[in-house]
Length: 135
Image (cartoon, rainbow, N blue to C red; front, side, top):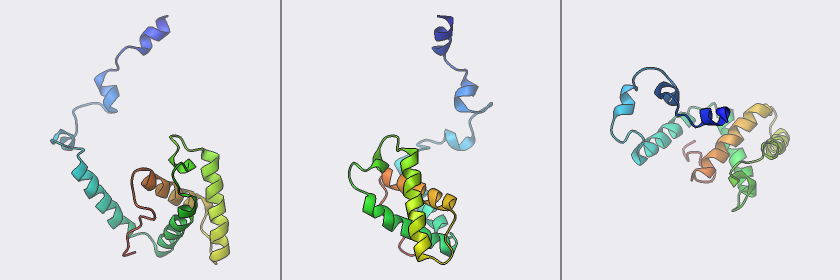
């Protein structure tokens, strides 16, 4: 019983925030995490994505195109907890496609990162293949 009673005790304030000391100044602003900030964050992300190396941009576009084929309502990418092995298998199949198309195929780790990034965007309301048009 003693163990369970310890679980129900509130954490000290410094442990719930993740650091010791006062809040950073920007967290004290009103509406720190508002919807307007979300739009600015998306613009910032798109700006930084245009700085990707040319090959990475090409891989990102191709991964988005391949993912379009498996993107439907109820697809495993929209599961609350997508299966890790299914996502890795999808990344491996994308790697095989890219190896057939490209002279120098990217590393599997890069494919996984770009795939997980694309899945994240789609799960959170992003457009399909939401790489900016000017890239």
